[in-house]
Image 1: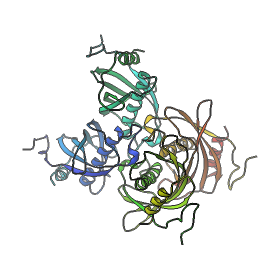
Image 2: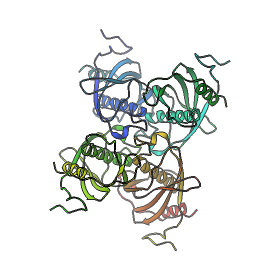
Image 3: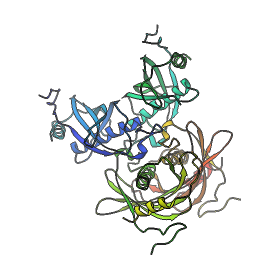
Image 4: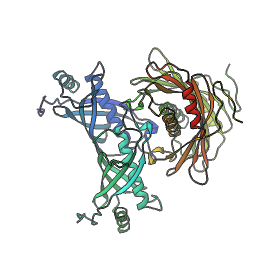
Amino acid sequence: MPSESAEIQLPSGTFESRLELRWGDMDALRHVNNTIYFRFFEEARVRLFDRVYPDGFSQRAMLLAHASCDFLRPLLYPASIVVGLKLTRVGRTSLELEGRIADAGASGLVYARGVSVVVCADAQTQRPVPWSAEELQALQRCFSE
Amino acid sequence: MPSESAEIQLPSGTFESRLELRWGDMDALRHVNNTIYFRFFEEARVRLFDRVYPDGFSQRAMLLAHASCDFLRPLLYPASIVVGLKLTRVGRTSLELEGRIADAGASGLVYARGVSVVVCADAQTQRPVPWSAEELQALQRCFSE
Amino acid sequence: MPSESAEIQLPSGTFESRLELRWGDMDALRHVNNTIYFRFFEEARVRLFDRVYPDGFSQRAMLLAHASCDFLRPLLYPASIVVGLKLTRVGRTSLELEGRIADAGASGLVYARGVSVVVCADAQTQRPVPWSAEELQALQRCFSE
Amino acid sequence: MPSESAEIQLPSGTFESRLELRWGDMDALRHVNNTIYFRFFEEARVRLFDRVYPDGFSQRAMLLAHASCDFLRPLLYPASIVVGLKLTRVGRTSLELEGRIADAGASGLVYARGVSVVVCADAQTQRPVPWSAEELQALQRCFSE
């Protein structure tokens, strides 16, 4: 049974994005640089919010308040990865996503886990804005498929 | 009085690195991209370990196990920043650094705070290696100046 | 009829690599940053040389001596692109590639054209090394499929 | 004697920007990645145009039409560099800059040379706009100091 949050019952599904590594994602230690893991999580969030706001972001800005990552094993080029996001908390104006970067192949090896906290803000004023019922429904659908 | 850790008495000083923003650090939201904050923390760590190992890293690799950042206010180009690191925990083979990204100007405005956990590893095998007494002393000196 | 070069008859084919844009490829002007076009050409070259050297690069390093790009129209996220490379010159220790970044969709719109000059070097000494007959054959096959 | 161009007499001075390398500028070959040279030239151009337009870019966008770079020797972290730009052509709506990336130290070693062609465009329509006499004077001053 999914746990509850202030506004919505948290969906149990995972929003998945498949991404390809680039050679240039590696650093002088010859594995993918730590900053790139955050780029992967960013890309996954952008794809998520493109679904929540199919008509574009003209009114809203999704501001990142917190990001963290546990680097579990080195990630080497070339590889295809799947970034899986789960919705783990929804506040009045924010939400928390737990992410996982895993191999897109049969192994499904998990390279990293991370957390992002996003604040829903007005695109002009950059001030926090409460989620509307419509936004919450759209969010829930993304994690229910 | 500084708190104690497994191996050393934690020094209370801050290791500071001054960095310049680049225009290209900004993203389509016209502020410095979240991944770049982790680049700034990385640069500060590299400068720290260049001091700990003045003869180079031929024997050791400093592997990042965890990184997090709280984004407190948007950072805009152009700006000079100071990344301050504090040593907050030293384990047998790892250490934890608390970082702060602040304006290099008089305001000293804090843009972000973050945590890094680094593991000391053998450069060849990439296996964790306990800190030597010499390494711990060199570390302590970096935070005592 | 393909033109000739010092060592080989230049193949007329195109080596194609399909790439996905990332949101973070855009800069504060809200289109893909100029440096990323060079990342795309780099990725295409890496895929090319991974084919030429299927056993890896242990003996050789491909050093970039020159790169240029004409930016024909702005590239916006999201998009899938195809980087097409043509072999336009082969010297004793170098080669020239002409590249094109085009939309992967039906439009085939060309966003940019560029040139790369690559030098074949010894992986240890980084000194130029003449192409072997085997390398030239492998190269030719990449542009003949 | 400086050569002439359509609109102005070309100034003979060099616009210099001092930049610091970051460890993360290096790639898996352990030298500064080719895309970063273009970032350095970009940063130098941004600093130039910040001088030409001290009140900001609200009316104009400087669009990059062409960029090239000859990579003369590998650039390794850590290093301080100076990017020098010379104004080599001014057209009705465009200009050409020749750049040089050199060591900021006594050696003055030149790592790379490059060319950028920039088009002056209307910030809204992104259409080319002729340089005004005022813009040309401001430009000239940047290369005369």
